[in-house]
Image 1 (cartoon, one colour):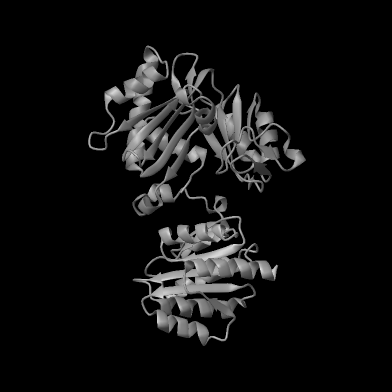
Image 2: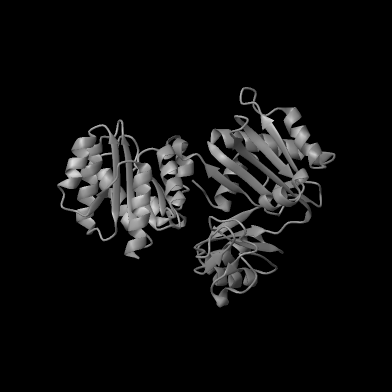
Length: 399
């Protein structure tokens, strides 16, 4: 789960990370009030969407101007004017996709005397089974660009989970960033606070980009991004209250309500599978036979007829879907339950695209019987390769 910048800063401030004063606004009038409370003389107006690259982004509406989604202004009037341009308009960044995201709130923040910009992040490194610090002197840039063009400028420090963050970790990072004097102490404090927040809040990623060194040698988190482990949200009530469903894909949000693991993709062949590994293999073999998967959808090992029905309806709600492949290996999940759900959903939504079903495992014969006696134009397959070949062929013939 993602949250907005201002929410991440709110959490980090509670853990002792130095952030600038600011206020969130949903209307131009609220933006003006927030600026008046801050006092100025310099303000920053920031679009709040779940996508990076806001400063370099472009608004679809000409009325929103050409200055991007993050703007430095020098008067309360300019704060209100820029908030008016941003709110309700769609911001397109390199992370938002071509469709962009509508700006429904802005963050009004104090200006800052910036001497230099750094990059700092905590993430889970599965290769080392540890929380890892990533740091770079190239703050303000996309870390992917730095990794590609100047990888030597990225410092990584792994933290043993049995000891947690130690002073030698923070010193290694501070020295690696070229900090001196009071800056080292400030950096160590921020790193310790970030680690504590990362662990206690069940974060999967915590990024400050840029972390700025100010003119008086202080360190300030000028931007912040946090992602959280969805499996741990049940114990993170405060984080869950920050969830912005407007920023989430509508189909993925609907899937979560039915305990379905769903990710929308750009292809034309919908997939319904039980098990994440099998789902990945199904998508791969669809591509092998010349098709493109329209989604990742794992119904889980203990899905009910009702959940299968909802999964099927979810696939068909995607207008790009031109065919469906159901691939089930029945273990805990019974093939007859899957078959009942597929038949029920196909009848409810008036199936109008080719449907290929491959069943194997528990109660497979009962499942195949249900499909054959349904009276629906369902294409059965003997194995996964046969199923992929048939669905790709059926989609091409129907085009």
